[in-house]
Image 1 (cartoon, rainbow, N blue to C red):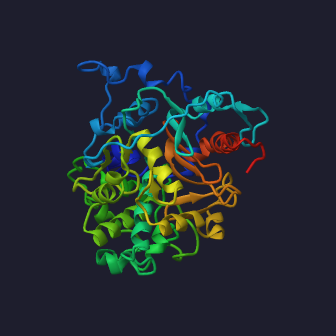
Image 2 (cartoon, rainbow, N blue to C red):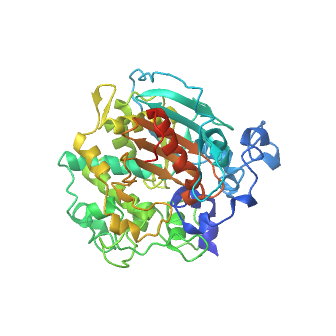
Image 3 (cartoon, rainbow, N blue to C red):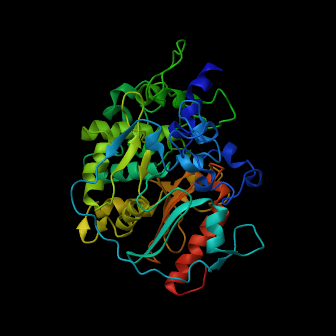
Length: 444
């Protein structure tokens, strides 16, 4: 169909950064493993020009077919329009290093498995592109694989949502954004859409009652219309749908009751991004740069993918350096302070850590995340360590364990989009490492 053809090249950029069950259901065994799919060994985009069988393009969707996506996630800026997120002109904040040699051999039990796995084995199992572990603010572990280098940038995918949610929590703590006001009060253009009658809090916690299916197997799912609207590519001559993220949001229809249940839908974050832009007078990219990125001592600028009107993709368009993502996580772990400088209000971080409505979250049916909740676009475990996380498809993660004083930042390119495909080997690995760094052995 013409709609699907229009957006196929951008579906994973514009909307597949969510967590759909349909993608998670594909057996991992059908894909080449991490070694066989290593993008450096496969030689994607090498040469001037690359050979036809190693050439990847944005307009035909070849860039996001596995295993090619393992190259693309570290090179999105070469393939699509983006906007900068400036780190400012200051000197990067140093990350102290105290590298440990006892982590690779650490053993843990994957969920639902009778066989132990080592930390090092888990990195390959999850198609890890890069991982940094901070303990008490020091780098204790750092690895890169494939084509990702320390100076490189990688797609954060839906980890982007947690950055947007953090900005919203910051404005709430500052009194600039009222979470109990209706979305339409801030963005009148959304009054006739399903978002108009929702509160900002319901956007922030994804408890809106909206009709937005992210079932990619269904050609009529709203995710395809969202992707088509956000695509910066020229539309077919007979295309009559919305032509930007903002235009698409105005078409979203109601389904269910606001506040009744958690439902993970990327459109919520795009709508929140519009609210933030209206309240601040800045795009979310500029707001992120001014309020966080330029104050964090980041090593690199970040960037965001944009639609044809230049609107940043709030739902999943952020790309950044791995160490900088770890810096952000460390700042959040420390209650909004990084290396002595307050960046976020303490109240904003405390609100994230409290978590959301666990009963509402349970209705979403995440079998591997019992007892969790969702608050300010962060995933909150409610375990004994108070751990919480930013999560993105294909394995992107910021995992913060306050009790263990640990932050894990990971980029990955798992062939299956949904986190359910790697949670079984990721979550117990993170918990085991936390205990190891604390010098104890009891599971959280």
